[in-house]
Length: 630
Ligand SMILES: *[C@@H]1O[C@H](CO)[C@@H](O)[C@H](O)[C@H]1NC(C)=O
Ligand SMILES: *[C@@H]1O[C@H](CO)[C@@H](O)[C@H](O)[C@H]1NC(C)=O
Ligand SMILES: *[C@@H]1O[C@H](CO)[C@@H](O)[C@H](O)[C@H]1NC(C)=O
Ligand SMILES: *[C@@H]1O[C@H](CO)[C@@H](O)[C@H](O)[C@H]1NC(C)=O
Ligand SMILES: *[C@@H]1O[C@H](CO)[C@@H](O)[C@H](O)[C@H]1NC(C)=O
Ligand SMILES: *[C@@H]1O[C@H](CO)[C@@H](O)[C@H](O)[C@H]1NC(C)=O
Ligand SMILES: *[C@@H]1O[C@H](CO)[C@@H](O)[C@H](O)[C@H]1NC(C)=O
Ligand SMILES: *[C@@H]1O[C@H](CO)[C@@H](O)[C@H](O)[C@H]1NC(C)=O
Image 1 (cartoon, rainbow, N blue to C red):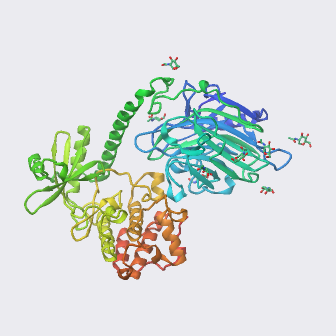
Image 2 (image 1 turned 90 degrees about the horizontal axis):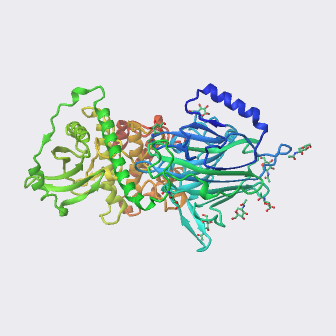
Image 3 (image 1 turned 90 degrees about the vertical axis):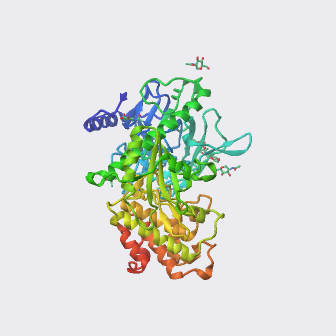
């Protein structure tokens, strides 16, 4: 039965499901598919089977959801009792990242239904949404192969395997690895490497043990499972179930592929004949549904990969710029008047000593920064951006005009620009103390005192408030983080990188709803600022995977501190305790928690945040019930 759901109206799908339920007496309890051309597979969403037999759950477009289920339900419980039966399955998958980071992952799923129409992409993997995530009525068991760290869903890292019951918050998870029997050690494995990985998932209903084991396709099955968990599945999964796969992309994408699948009730799943599996196309993932070119070009693929990745990231950069300009000019064409100061290339070049390496300040957000001396008294920072197309250049120049109009004491001011060939030089005022992240997260800078920190926080709040509501045109920053805050000689904060450069916020600063919608708003800026305030007070990053579990996520840790009433304890230990002003520390951390509320409606506006910090408005009545986090 070959069924493609892509072009079939919902009615047809219902009819097919009806058909399936009619023939479900023909229950199969064992199958082995090398490729899926002749497999009894139902496909939903973006999934498709290539003529080579390769099953593609999602391609590298954004926010795709793809599922594929075995056509007949599997009787997982003995009809005469509530006891579950054992099962064993093995499959081979490959995840080939799109441009940039991979996302979001794939899952093996056991579910009473194949209807996932309400589910979200990205971290919800096409299985759940914010309202049914974790609901025991879902009766879903999934084993996720997750390539993005969603902090609010307690993900441990961006390359893990997890056991999920009824939701995407894993009951158990661990970084992807396999056990090498000969060397008796764990070897870590990159899920999104584009290479085929074989998985074994086994459940022994007598022992109530669920084991998940994985290894590169060319390795034998390791003797030790990666995840081994005692689990009473009766009462959790229902009697008859569909088994299959689900994958999703978000703003970061991968092509999620399955090469073969074997399943068995009672008794081990049959082994693959590796030579019969479809081969993978050269990266990136199949763009056209042609049989994948087989083998033998392996040695040359590395160069091709680099070229493709470069080309792809350039495309993404251009798309981001275009989107930005749309955001600036939507409905307000008159704002673009073309008045930024233009510098000659010679001026810029002689100011920076011909872009001498000794003047290089660093590379950040898709450009190199140089220090320059414009006049004996005027020092500048020059950002050199190389444009790959004329379109990109035009777009960037249009943006510069907007940005150069924005002047505020806590924003990095853009003086003007210069363009030569395919290069654009942005001329900024110079911030002698560099970026804030160097002060917070490394030990090569002087320790900031409490009053420095409080002043820096208030400065950023003032800049964001200006951008959001007071500037010539309301703007969203979209990338609030410590490395985008510069410090002048008096350690006053200057928020930079608004309006251009990379829009990819860092993990830890991304608001939960932004993960779903991919859209930066005022609310997501407030969230990121909340997290940043905590980083400044605690002198650590939002996510530190090497910390003990309860401290990995800074937001959670601060929240725990708040509940226990020992917020002062989690302050950066490098700050001189004498200089700490308890009232201010508490004010900042509580405001941070309000801003980092999971729910965007509950976050204050920047204007209000500024007044809290300024002391002109008091915080809403303190208490954990006002600060809800998952
Ligand atoms: C992914 O698939 C969709 C639908 O078939 C198609 O429109 C889109 O162009 C594909 N994207 C890529 C990157 O191949
Ligand atoms: C279920 O019970 C019926 C009647 O007691 C019996 O004939 C059948 O073999 C049992 N089925 C299983 C799977 O044990
Ligand atoms: C979540 O999914 C369920 C089940 O598909 C659906 O009824 C519900 O409307 C969805 N909720 C949201 C917020 O999309
Ligand atoms: C390998 O990893 C497993 C699962 O994470 C763990 O239980 C085991 O102790 C590790 N073994 C070694 C030798 O590191
Ligand atoms: C699961 O793994 C444990 C420990 O590695 C092993 O003792 C057990 O036999 C395994 N069970 C199955 C069903 O593979
Ligand atoms: C489950 O475990 C029991 C007890 O260790 C063993 O006798 C049985 O063969 C196992 N079943 C499967 C399917 O591995
Ligand atoms: C497993 O769960 C079922 C349903 O919740 C319960 O009836 C059964 O007693 C449990 N078995 C064990 C060994 O705990
Ligand atoms: C693929 O590899 C096999 C065995 O190495 C070889 O015989 C065959 O010619 C190769 N196919 C192509 C298209 O290079």
